[in-house]
Length: 316
Image 1 (tube, one colour):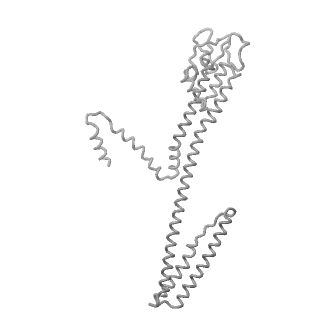
Image 2 (cartoon, helix red, strand yellow):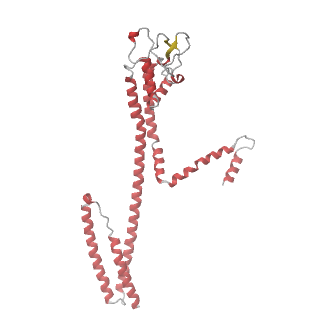
Image 3 (tube, one colour):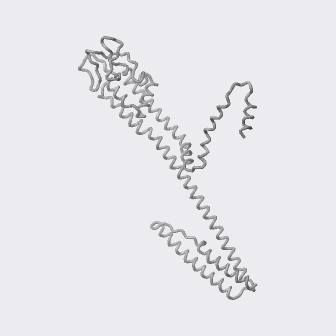
């Protein structure tokens, strides 16, 4: 098979084309997918993921819409706020850090107007001024819509969102800063992203229910098929008994055995029908009780038929 495939590729691709076809061997990494056909539970998971693609796309659009809305609000509140930091008085281009990290600062000339929670520079060593590239090399900022969307996405994933909160507190104060970040985390992280898990969980439950219903259907169909075969077998025995009763070589004793067995069978069948109706009435309280009158009547009828047939053969 592999040689035929190689000849086919050689025929399709010209000889003078400089292409390394050995890269096609990477397709062999898909061989483990054959295990999916042998593991029913894994099939349920994969089918659930595939069927959840359409709802996940709708949720993705909803999350994108929320990110754009919060990014636009962030542009109004924090545009250019994260580019101010403390520069040394001696060297204008030397940044004075707080510990090992560069921190945004609140630029003002009136100490009485500094908001609560804002970071101010030491007036004896540095002054707050613009010119810093910003946190994370300027990526974490609200200067344009793209960086704002990336920053909002980082916040709703809850990966380093507290650092962004502290940077905005240092730059603008903490009096009204929480009004932006609290709805962002509650709506974006706790609600919208968890919708993805909700959709996957719902699709998985539907797929598992479908598989269970199919298994139940196959089980019921097998039971009905078995019952049909048993009924046909019992009907064949009844016809055989009629033939034996019609034979002149059948003795009176054998005929009496067959008639008596039929009476016992009819009586037992009537009793089982009564018990079955009683069980159906008590099903809500005690649960249903499965009864198989065909299976119960099959053994005595078969044994009686074999006994009668053996005695009939001895008389021949």
